[in-house]
Length: 87
Image (cartoon, rainbow, N blue to C red; front, side, top):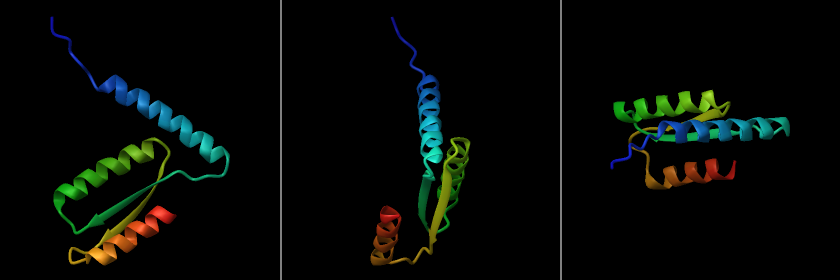
């Protein structure tokens, strides 16, 4: 017998947990934030980012975007990632 697996209930449960954790952190003066680092302006990347931003905002997460030009060097990208990681 086949069993249909649905990710929707799992995603909803995860969202409830994350939303509650964000509220707890906010109550303690901590601003939960999603950092998005994007290199270049590919349509696919922008569409993915747009979805991530919508989901984050629905969970009461702040969003900070770090948009780098397509010709960004590896050293510049690593510096940006370090900055995001240390924040």
